[in-house]
Every structure is written in structure tokens, then in C-alpha cells.
Length: 381
Image 1 (cartoon, rainbow, N blue to C red):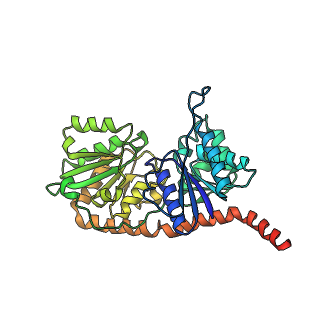
Image 2 (cartoon, rainbow, N blue to C red):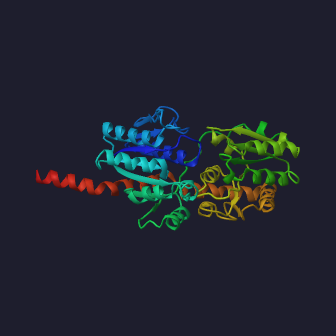
Image 3 (cartoon, one colour):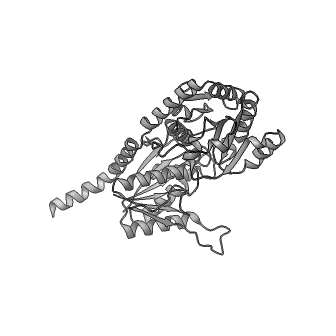
């Protein structure tokens, strides 16, 4: 199949998933055309059957901001027409799915649109009255819609009341590779334990809960905190560490491509988010045998089993999260057992192969009517 994939070129989960899906499909022999404002972080190196198309919105005097949605729709139509794409897979409802629908109109229906919902396109952007009708349209008119969790599927039904099927296709991870890194020597001298948090540092990630949890942990156990990512709440977190006197025990790395090395050096992963439609960062930690301590919100209970792969606590309960962390850090056997369980779940329940099979099945389903017509025409000619 010849498939277009449209996504954000950020470090967020939707861009990561879109890129990894594209790479996995290309490895199976499909031709993949990835459209984004810039090269996504996970699209590194040169790979066969993957083509990148940069989307640039040209400034226009009458507009205060360049019309990216129109530029994206035009690029989708041009790429689909020139390369004979059969499907445009939009990761995020707006602007990607809405732009794909415009591209389908421009091509007079010669393009199928598959939309994957990732989270904030439904729970934040989609529920905003300013965008609700357009998100509903994108969901209703797509040829197929998938969501990354049962929680997100149910939220979509509750918010938009769309009478259509939504396939739940979870995110996936691959097995870590390579030798154990040496970063522990300088991240955690004097045998201190390492707690890690990875996010875009937006308010929904509750970065200050990470800092408060660590503040409690360090009182009873020697530890270091690694904060990976960047965003609007980073400055507040850095100031808090300075004010409380543990700045030297926290390392803010900024945005990182080498997430595997960070996680391979970690003992516990903290994710106290206000909501998570899936929790890809938690799944990646589990794949590295790192127990997860997270909020019991959104789709996280579909990923992390409380008391088995880590712990799920009520939103904002930093005391409970700190107790869980100390328990894991002081009981090596418990941490090892949970880590093994977490990795087994990540690499079996969320294995790449079966999940890519599910995406291929969706593609085949939406193409089936068109292929039936072609087959019939060939039989009658």
C-alpha cells in the first residue's frame, strides 16, 4: 500500500507513535509518505520506503497568521496525487484529519482518510466550543477512526455523540537493544537511586507533583531526579529545586532523542499527570524494566497494573507516590520483580507486530470497496 501519514513534529506521543507506525509499515514493504512541518525526532537516519514532505505555510498579507491547515491540505492533495497514495493517516483530529478531508475533496474522493485520536485533540482541543463542531466533522467523515485506549474511545463518544465505530489500537514499544549504559556513574554517585520523569512540561503533566514527590523521597533515601523534556513549567520546577535546597540532586536534561539511555539508568519512573489518554512514556519505561508510579487517571490503568508493574495513586497524592517510591528503592527484590513484570507486559501486550497488524487490517477494510470495484471492472473487461 501507498500511505501518507500526517503528524506533529514534536517530542509528544502522537508524533512518536505516527513516526514509529510509519517505520514499521515501511519495514513490511509499504510505501510511506510522512507530512509534517519539520522532520519528527524519531525519523532519524535514512530508511528505505519512507519519504518526508515538509509542510510550509506561506505568509499572506490579509492573514495575521499563515494558514497552516490549508497549506497542509494542499500538500496532502499534491503528494497523494503525485505518488498515488491510497490512504492518508491523520494523527490528531485537527488540523490533520480536517486537512485530510479537504485533500480527499480536492481529489474527488480518490483518497481514504484514517484518523487516529491521541488525547488532547479530544479531551482539551476537541471539547473547546470553538473547535467542537470541526472535530466532530473530522471524526464523522473519516473512513475509519482509531483511538489509543478504551478510555479515549469512551471520552470521544461522550463528548461528540458520534454514531460510528472507533477501533481501539494501543501504542506499542520495541525491545531495548544495546549494552547497559554507563550514565549511572555520573547521574547518581554514592549509590544514590535514580527517579525519572519524561514529558513536555505542560500543566497537565503536573511537573510540580514530581518535584514534591522527590522532595519527600530524598528525606529518607539517597536519590537523584532526572527531568527529561522542556515546556512552560520547567522554570517553576527549577526554581522550586533551588528554593528547597536540592538543586544539585536534580538534572534537567531538556529535550532528548536518546530516551533509551535515560530509562536504562532509571530505577523508578514518575508520571503524576492530571490525565493521560494512554501514557506512552510509562510504557517505554516499563519496556526497560522500570516500575512506574503514576496517577490513576485516563488510560493509564490500561497500561500499568497497580501492585504488579508499579503503582497507581489518586491524582495529586504526592505522599502516596513518595511512599511507593521509597518502598521500591529500598526493596531491591520488589523493584526487580515489578520491573520484570512491567517489561513482560510491555513487550507482549503492547508488542509492535500485532499492533501493526491491526493498523493494516483497518487500511484493508477502508480500501476493500474500492478494490472490489477494480476487481469487478477487470473481470468484465
